[in-house]
Image 1 (tube, rainbow, N blue to C red):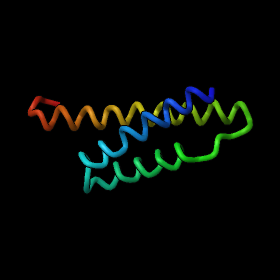
Image 2 (cartoon, one colour):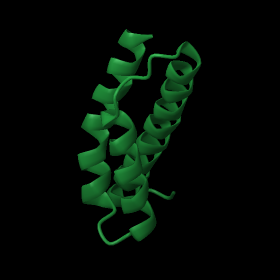
Image 3 (cartoon, rainbow, N blue to C red):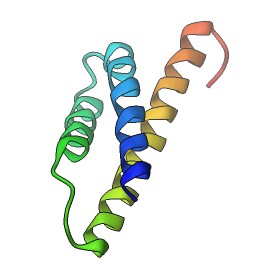
Image 4 (tube, helix red, strand yellow):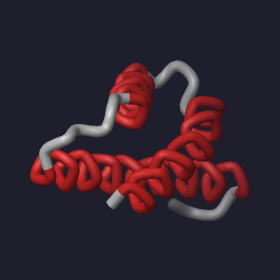
Length: 81
């Protein structure tokens, strides 16, 4: 579980700056990015159920971050969304 969470944290750390750059001025995205950063930086819970919940939350956030950055790249390239 620790390895999975570290991988998700690394992915979030890579994607957050990209999403921030491409969605400046979008308040909803900025709130989502802050919430994702807080989740990624939070101390790992000791309870196994809470560890699984945190990993699931991080995975969902990384998935959404990936979609945000891919949407930005597609839009910037001029292709339809």
